Every structure is written in C-alpha cells, then in structure tokens.
Length: 103
Length: 171
Image (cartoon, rainbow over all chains, first blue to last red; front, side, top):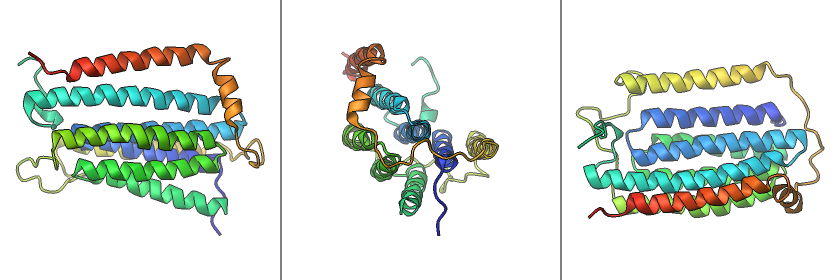
C-alpha cells in the first residue's frame, strides 16, 4: 500500500512545488504567468506552515499562512495594476521589452 | 485512506502546477492554478486545518484568481509572443537566462529535498482525530496577533489605493 504521509513527505511536496514556481518565474516570458508562478511559490510556503503546525500541534502556523494569503491578495492587486500600466505603455507582456527605465 | 487521498492530491497539485508553468495561454494557466488550489485545500483538510481549506477556496480561488482572470481577459493577450525561431520552450538548450533559470530550479529542488533527508522522521504531535477549530484560531488571532491583524488592514488599504493609482489612465 501507499506510504503514510509524514512531515517530511509534506515538506518534500512543498519543496517540489516551490521549485516549480521558481522555474516559472525564470522561464516564462509573460508577466501574468510570472505572477501566477509567484502564487505557486506562496502556496508551497503556506503548505509548509500548515504541515509544521500539525506536526507541532499549534495554530500559529495557520495564522501565519492566513497573513500570507492576505499579503498575496495585496501583491496580486498591485502586481496586476503594474502589469496593466506596463501594457498600456508597450502593448506587450514580455518582461524583456521593459528594459529601459526611461522612455 | 488518508495516505491514498494525500497521494491523489499531491499528484494533482504537482501536475497542475507544472502545467501552469508550461502553458502558453495565460487563461489556461489561471484555470489550472485553480485546480491546484482545490487540491491544496484537500491537503489542508488532511492536515486538520479546515479553516485554511475554506480560506484557500474562498479567498484564493474565489477572489485572487478571479482578479487574475479579469486582467487576462481585459488585456486579451491570448498567448505568449514567439521570439524568432524559438517555437518550443527549450529548457536546457535555450538562451542564457532561461537555461540558468531551469538549472537553478533543479538545483533548488535537489538541495531542498537533500536537506530534508537529513531530518529524522518524526511522528505528528497528536493522533489527528481533532481538527483545529475556528475558535482556537480566532482567539489566538485577536489576542497575540491583534497588532499584526490591524497592520494587515492598513496593508490592504495601501495596496488598494496603490492599485487604483497605478492602473489609472494618465492624462
């Protein structure tokens, strides 16, 4: 039968998800997909917090994960506003197009 | 039974996250990320955190992803622009920065899992029969973490004003 999940299994799953998110941030050339990859990374970290929480038998990890979700919402709002503003200037979402600080 | 569900959710999460990163069309990426969040919510239930599971669906899948969907539809960029003859994403033999990114991600995964191997296996603190109640979380949130909670409301306000100012049309 399948092995019973332990704390290490959850942490390994979280590490894999975080790496997938990192790969997305570096590999994609679409600002929206890059922001989505950041969300994947944030969720990997949340999974770590909740898993360690269960391991220790406390609720502090869940509260920190709650704050992470709040910050992620703020980050998504500001990030998407910046994406919209950039799209107005350049008509593209390719991050390589935004190389100049002045135009 | 828990083990079966864990592996089902873990596989769904990894596959959908890989597809989120691999998709060319951002619309599919957003929808696949919602699938990934649903699986993560299932994992939270297995971890005795029903409050987090509900929050994950309501706030993440319900609010943040809808925001992303709005922007994807508003900008109407159906797929990533192709650069020259770069038809397929070549992860290993691509241009410099992309190759570096792929290598970095693999190194990070290997490093993290190698670090985990040095930790001894330890059982969970409780037997997992009693889920965390919203009451526990609420009491702790509004006592020990009351200041952080209030600071978060300021953060949300700043983010809201900032988003409005950034996305406003310039005259």
